[in-house]
Image (cartoon, rainbow, N blue to C red; front, top):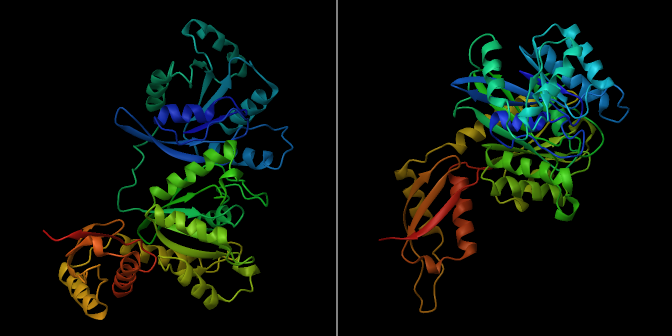
Length: 428
C-alpha cells in the first residue's frame, strides 16, 4: 500500500500513526521525505506493507523534484492499494489535480484521505475532494488519530491476497553507514538492480533510513540505507539532526554494519569515527571501499591502517556500484560476519584459550605484589558475542591487559570485525 500526496500534506505523520512508531522523519519543512520508505503495519492480526513516498510536485524544479516524483510513480505501480492524502485546510491545489490524473491513469484502487480535520464536526469539509473523481473521501487527522481506525478497517478489507510475510530473526540485518556522499545509496541500488533510492552528488540526499529486503541463495538480508554521519555535532541541525538519529537507531538494530569509505579519497578520520559508531552499537563491521573504479589507493596498505586504528580489526572489501565489481564478494563477507556474530564458542575451547593466555602473559600485579589471574570463562550472550571471564580480583585488571585478552581471543576464534564484549568478574 502506497501513500502519495503533494509535499507537506502529512504523509509521514500518517505513516507514524498507522505503524504506531516514529519511523518516518516528520518536520514542518516541506520535502523532508525523498525516497520510498517501506514499513510493516499490523491491524487486527493482518500484516501489510506500507510505503511512504516523497511529496509529488510536478512543478518542482529543484535538484530532487523529478527523482521524488519517479519514486512515487514506482510505488504506485507496485502497490495493490493507494492512499491519496490531501490537505483539507489548503483545499484542492493544481498539484493535487496533477496527481489525481496520474492515479486515474494508473488504474489502481485509491482511497482519498482528507487530512488535517482535527475536529470531527468539520468532517463535511472532506466533501470538496469528490471533484477529483477518485471516490468518497475519508476525513481524518493523522496528527490526532481521528478516523484512522476506520481507515485501517477499510484498508484491510480492500487489500488483496495474503498477509505480508514477516522477516524473522534469521534475517541478516545490515546497516549501510558512512559520512555524507560516500556512495551508500548507489551501493544499495546496485545490490537491488534498480533505482530504489535517490542518488545525487549533493551531500545529505538521504534523510531517512530505508529498509529493503534482499534474498540471495536462500539468505534474507534486510538492507538499511542511512543518512550520512557527520563527525561534529554542531554540523547537525534541524532535519539533518533527526536523520542522523535514525541512522544511529538503524545501527543499533543491525547485525552487520557496512562502513563505506570513498576509495577515491582514501581513509579519513571521519571514516574511523563512523566505524566506532558501528562498534559502540554492537554491530559486526565490514569496511567497504566504495567507488573502487575511480581509486588508486593501495588495498594492503589500507587494511594495515584500519587494523592499527580500529579495535574490531574489521575485514576490508573493495567494490564498485558503477561496474558491480566486488558486490557478490561483499555479501559473502556479510554472511560470514553474521555467522560469527551469532556464534557460540564451546566452553572447553574457550577455557583452553584462557589457560594459554594465562601462560603467555601473566596478569598485572597490585601494590602488594598480588597478581591478576585468569581462572575460567563462559559465553553469556550472542548477537554479538559476550563473554564472562572469572578472575581472582577484578580490581587488578588494567585497560591494556583487558584489550590484550580481547584481541587474543578475537584472533584465536577468528572474530575479526566482531565486537567481542568481555566482563571480568570475581570468582565466587
